[in-house]
Structure formats: structure tokens, C-alpha cells
Image (cartoon, rainbow, N blue to C red; front, side, top):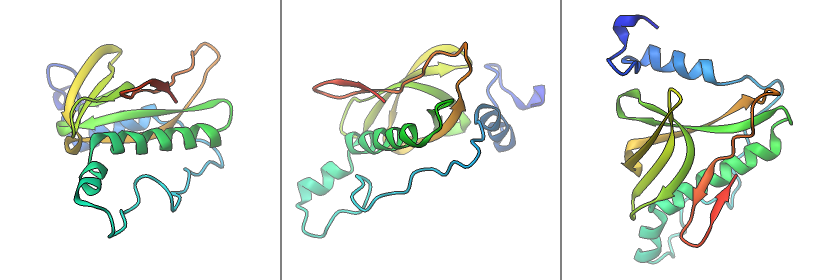
Length: 159
């Protein structure tokens, strides 16, 4: 990444630099294929018989986060022992947060706890302005497990 393609916070400024940064974090997993989307997955279209309230609830950040939690669990179950799933939140402008915890803070708002270049951050965002990417990282002997925390109204869960 060239020095003139970063801003003062050392954040990549163009798509090529964003992709280069992501590719350095993602570990190729021989023979691994991401989990298939099941017919009963949370992110499948709602039946036409749903009420307006049910349709609105389906659009909530809670459903978005539940779908992501389901995806991370599926990755964890299928990855070999020496790999673990990780999630990166990609925000407008290419800002990337290595996700540690996620919570719904309003109907469509998400609180992201994580790291940007090993510095702790908390980001509040609308669910439509963030993209979540699940990927595999190789677990090295000196690396501690990195569960992703989901904070629900009635409990906390690490997946």
C-alpha cells in the first residue's frame, strides 16, 4: 500500500488498498467451502402471509445480527480445528473494524465493538451502512481463541 494512498489515520483510501488489506487478513482453507444457505435460514424471504408488523420486524437489526450469528456458527462447525471464523465490518469509505462484539441498539442501529489496527473502537451505525464479512483465520499456537460476541436483550452469546 503506498503512503500517499492512506489518510492521516493510516486507513486505505482506494478500493485496491482496501482489498489488499483484507486479503492479508484472510487465510485460505484447503478444501473448505462456506456453509450453504438453508431453506429455513433467517435471511430467506418472508411468506406473503406475514403481517405488516412481522415484515417490519424482519427488517430489524436484530434479524440481521441473528443471521450473522447463524452464519458464524455454521463456519465454526465446518472449519478445520486450526481455523476459526472472524468477522470484519466494512463501513463507508472502506473503514474496516475487526469485530469483537455486536449489539442491536435501536430498530435498525448496530453497536460494533472491535479493533482498528489493534486499537479498540466502538462504532454505532445504521444496519444499511455496514457490510459484514465472515472469513477464516488460521489459529496459531500463540493465538488465543477469538469468539465473536453477540449481545441480545436477554443474554450474551459468544460464537
